[in-house]
Amino acid sequence: MNLSSDKLALDGGTPAAANLQFPAWPPVSDDAERDLVEIYRSRNWSFGGAHELAFAQEFADAHDADFGVFMVNGTVTLQCALALHGVGPGDEVIIPALTWPATAMAVIYLGATPVFVDVRPDTICLDEAAVEAAITPRTRAIIPVHLYGSMADLDAMKAIAERHDLALIEDCAHAHGGKWNGKGLGSIGAVGSFSFQQSKTMAAGEGGICLTSDESFAEKLYRMKHIGYGPAVRQGAAASGPPEGMPVYNFRATEFQAAILRHQLRELDALIDRYNANAARLEAMLQDVPGVRVQSRGRCSTRQSYYCLLFLFDEEPMKDIPLSLIQQALSAEGLTMLWPTYGVVYKHLLWNVPSANYRIAGDCRVAEDVGMAHGIAMVHYFLGMSEADIDALGNAIIKVARNADALRARTASSVE
Ligand SMILES: *Cc1c(COP(=O)(O)O)cnc(C)c1O
Image (cartoon, rainbow, N blue to C red; front, side, top):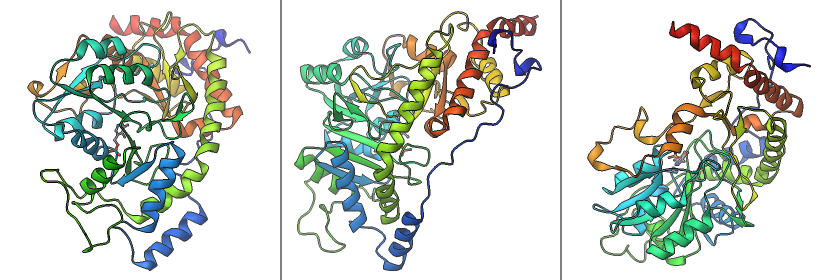
């Protein structure tokens, strides 16, 4: 097939990937259903239940951390991880400019100031030089986000955090099952935070967890989410209270969520292996195609996790073609499941924080470039498609990239 001569579906040509079979997400199983019914009948639905405690330990073990504290979502887990380190008004927390707004909102909830910092052009995760440059006497913590299908450079982040005495909190909402140099993501910083929201790589509708290997952190985090009760204390049976002044909340999640996640955790390795195989297949297909590339994996990724596969149309001949037109062309080829990235947080539709309450360090040029002009993401479960469908998807992207001239002609005519 000579792709370069194939007419774009947008221009009336035949779609390159018309009949992709999309996997359903989240997964359902008879085994999980049986557990859910059993929990329902047991009337033990929350409050340090058996599934909660078992899941928290199993998830911690799978990520090489000693303790897990299960919570209601992956935003409050970040909030608690920061609160644990005493972050509050007047303090600054460094986060990447390109992430889901939740990373920044967790800082805002504590009255502290999120500082948006640029990302690297290869991994699209925090840039270590930009982090260094953003540090002030008020900086208390760094939250690297392991974004989409990559990971932040944890060796660099750890070194910076140690040098400046800052808390290192990993936002692993996209990183279930990932390994940095053989060690589970979420176990390298002081605390690792995960989300189990509906679309994430492990999903229970809602949910989140903090991982740590510091026992006193684990105890405090548990008290924070359990209105002051310690780990595994039943209702009304507290033997001791929380430390004076420590903020305590009700951030408890239920047994139903924990039971669903225990089943998914058993399938996680196989799921990620499949994602890795298909991501590698797409990377190989696109390797020598001018105009498109895939986000680089983490520098020391020994097991890449995927929340999305991120395609970057930031090289010639695609560089100057509007992102919305690229998305339209891909959609016409049958790739209706590809979407622009979140964009930079401080330009997000949902971001309503007054400018006095956050800071943009430097120009965040890479984050703006990728986020606003060049990045198109495919959520992870499409990486579960068959090899034939993955090939069709890759061919559709190649076809669009090779038709850059036809796309450019459209922008020229629409300007007239
Ligand atoms: C989803 C997400 C969160 C927050 O998770 P919720 O469970 O939705 O609160 C935090 N950070 C990132 C990068 C996310 O994608």
